[in-house]
Amino acid sequence: MNSASTRTARRRTLRVAAAVQGAGAAGKQAGSANAARGGKAGSGIQRCHTSDLKAVFATGEDATPDPNAGGSTTTSIVLTNKSSRTCKIGGFAGVDLKPDANGPGWSLVRSSAKHGSITLAPGDSTDFTLNLGMAKENDEGSWKPATVAVTPPNETTALTLKWPWGPLVDQRGATHPATFVNPIG
Image (cartoon, rainbow, N blue to C red; front, side):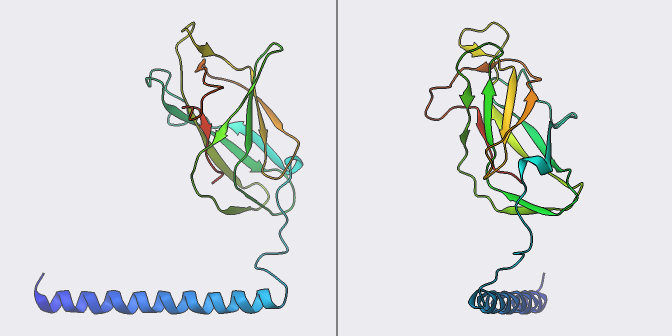
């Protein structure tokens, strides 16, 4: 690229950046004015409740955890708005792995990833991933859950799924386990 085209490209980039910055400032002013009146953007949309949602494990080639991943793989849980109203969801779902017999379960820790919120119209879906520390069948220190209880953010009622995969490395007492939950969206 010659110096004239470089200068033209640089000017075009600066104009686009200035336009974006101006739009952002206008949006902040509008948001401040709305907040001063006591409202907030999208305040008419309520959060998604457990009864609004359906949960399933994602299926397909890239959604199935790799049992030969050497301990570290992922899977996704899909949340679908089954209600007739639009709702918002964001943050972390509570995920509890439960054994088939009476015994201690495993409440998964959260990743440090940032999160926002997503608006789901009726029939819309979003997902979140679980990082999994997979183990081989009958490995020492392995543990296989029977069910997964998924509690949407700010809810106390869970949706229950059957655990479709193999055993995990049992790190229920670990400070930084290989099995943990990531934010929705």
